Amino acid sequence: QLRIGVMTSGGDAPGMNAAVRAVVRTGISRGCQVFAIYEGYEGMIRGGNLIRPLSWDDVGGILHKGGTVIGTARSTGFRTREGRREAAANLLAHGIDRLVVIGGDGSLTGANLFRQEWPELIQELVAEGRISAAVAARHPFLGIVGIVGSIDNDFSGTDMTIGADTALHRITEAIDAIGSTAASHQRTFVIEVMGRNCGYLALMGAISGGADWVFIPENPPEMEDWQSHICEVLRKGRASGRRDSIVVVAEGARDRQGNPITSQEIKHLLEERLGEDTRVTILGHVQRGGAPSAFDRWMSTLLGHTAVLELISTTPEREPHLIGIRENRVTRVPLMRCVTDSRAVTEAVTAQRYEQAMELRGRSFGE
Ligand code: F6P
Image (cartoon, rainbow, N blue to C red; front, side, top):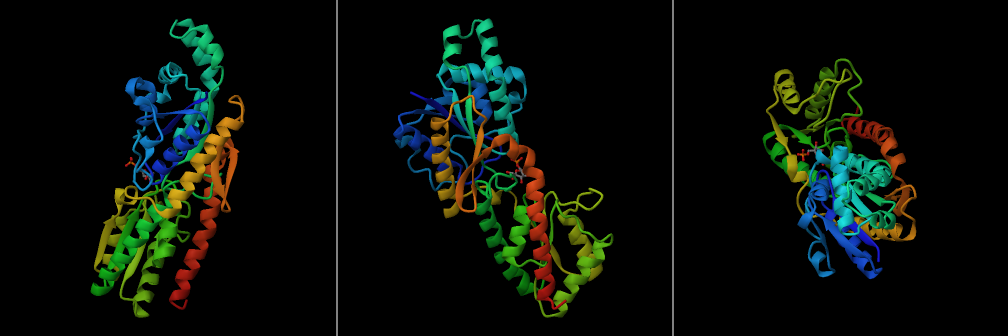
């Protein structure tokens, strides 16, 4: 009987519960035993009751819940070889040698390293007398499958990451809500959204909410004097009768020199140069928590289901894959290719969309 561990790692993302539920139920229906590894890699390192089998009913009533019911963490311990050796010992204590890792870039890179080191780690455990040679021989390889959970949508190999759709809905609702109060007072709002390195949420939020300007990390403003440019665009918008002005800023936005462009800086600029009554709203973790959208529920369910089928149908020594969604179909792509490509691919897609967003913005003012 295969013993599969499932864990969520890194920042939580709405839809993670749906994926965990699908992994558990698919595993059980295919005759496997599925263990939850609580609190991400921290739970794997600490072991004990942080690794527990889950029944069909244990994952009932979680599909619609935000966050992750099995907990998550950003583990520093797993970055060390000692940490990974402890983790291997704890998995073997339960006979687990297959893992579904639901997490972001760092979590999936860590999983791949763990898989590569596994044969050596278990030999070290044998040498230390912590596991028997027979146990080591029964589990010579660690099979892993990755699923990307991150509201930032910052990973290649999948069109959408778990949680991005929900976060985008929340941002769009916030822009709509702010738009109505902004229009009432003829105010300008600078709305800061998450996205440390990736402007997906800011860009798509700006398009969905019809914002006047967007700042993202991937496309720093082209003009040297971008400050004059944005002021001119907002001024024209007002002149054409617009009662509200909305600027969306990704938290990781920067200029061509790599200096951060902050929401406060933009507020001061617009107040000083345009005399606009300007407010800043930082959406923060409201974007990350709360109930997953229908899309995040069904996509995560299909990904979790497929991840288990992948673990069952391939041998653990084979190159690990990422289960994602491309053009509406569930796909499997070599995990490490996705990790290496991620930045370049997402940046290229974003750059194209940025051009479209800016063009539409211009048209709405008859430029
Ligand atoms: O989940 C990704 C992300 O939301 C980033 O956009 C953001 O910078 C970061 O997580 C913040 O995470 P935390 O508050 O958990 O450190």
